[in-house]
Amino acid sequence: MMNEKQVDLKQAALIGVNWIPCSGSNTLKVFNPASGELLGTVPKLSEEQVRYAITTAERAFNSWRKTSINERCAVLNNWYQKIKENEERLASIITLEQGKPFAEALGEVRYAASYVKWYAQPALQDNGSAMPNGSEGESLKTITEPVGVCAAITPWNFPAAMLTRKVAPALAVGCSMIIKPAPETPFTALALSELALLAGVPPGMINVVTGDAQLIGDTVCTSKQVKKLSFTGSTAVGRHLMRACASTVKRLSLELGGNAPFIVCSDADIDKAVEGAMQSKFRNAGQTCVCANAFYVHDSLYDRFASAFEKRIKALSLGLGGDPHTDIGPLINERALEKVEALVRDAREKGGKIVYGGERWAESERWYLPTLITEATTDMRCVQEEVFGPVAPLVRYSDEDSLIASLRAQDTGLAAYFYSESLKRIHDLAAELEVGMVGVNTGVISDPAMPFGGVKSSGLGREGGRQGITEYLETKYIKLCY
Ligand code: ADP
Image (cartoon, rainbow, N blue to C red; front, side):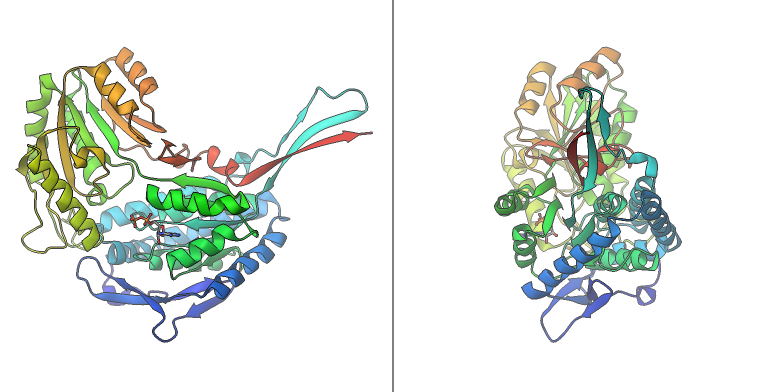
């Protein structure tokens, strides 16, 4: 981790080639979540400036869309190289503004870069098809075209990866981007965008608008020039944006709240399940959308699983992201801490046993202790809602069919995890769980080559894989008579 002073933060918005500096007090303040110190500011753009960014993006799109796939992919490869060359600096920025341990931040930068590399492959792009069923004298074919100017609204928990996952496929097919980073973590987005310009991404293809979320959201959602919105964040904001996009019938990709169940079946390998539980629950202090939320553990191995899990949880070390021994950093802000506190209080009141943790860290109130709650029940808020913190509730179950039925009844359907050594059960459960992604005997599922996304209220569309490309393409059917 670099020294704070060595990390240069770009305190500006980006429109075309122009870095828009902060002026006066009309700024957004960005704080270090570990210390509460002010890291810097970014401007609060006016509606007029956001509109200007959209027009700039439209102009850039109109020439970039005519470039060849090879040319676009070469630029993406350059961007990938620049990200790799600057990975430590980028990771330091993530740790500074987001709080996660430096090793995790570096992992995120590499993961973010892997999307750029993946989408730099020309062979991923399937440019339509010809149908053989036209009569003589006619040809039926389809071509694909970039949708146009796109907007990306990204969250603070993965400020680099959530950006490249949207921007790389967009650029690969020729779309330009208006990026609105989360107010907590704009500096990662700005650093990545600066590298994109250095890599040869033409000015205007990437624009970073900072400021009032509502104003920017309303402006891009109601703009006829913006053809698509890709959003990652909370379900409530996703619903709001979906409504706002209705006026222009905009294309949408939404990656919303998760509440992933983690099931430990009666025939699970307990050691492997505990390992997966640790990775899935405590990465980024529990602040990931695919985090295991509640654990459903079969009665026959509940106590053994709970005690092995407790041992591992107790060994987690809390600290600053820059300290190489740190496993758990601070939560993003006071609102997040208060939510975790409320959910744990509710669990306690409803009979949950706090085996470990259950409060803020004595050394700093910006951290929440990794927490294990046994005898958790499905009426508890920490089971029903996404905790987004380092809290693991363990629900005991004995009848698998009724467990699966109750999970299928949940509104959310992003990811699910389960551990089993039986081939039949693996096959059946993977089919029955109503989610977009399933981890079987693993707590980590993301891969740039594979589609990431959810069903039901967890969202629309997929990012990553081949599917991630089609989100930025329109299909045009051409019937030609000759
Ligand atoms: P969280 O509560 O975890 O911060 P949000 O869904 O509020 O999740 O935030 C995700 C992203 O959505 C952030 O970039 C945030 O600024 C943005 N956002 C929040 N409210 C709005 C809104 N009304 N319009 C547009 N973007 C919004």
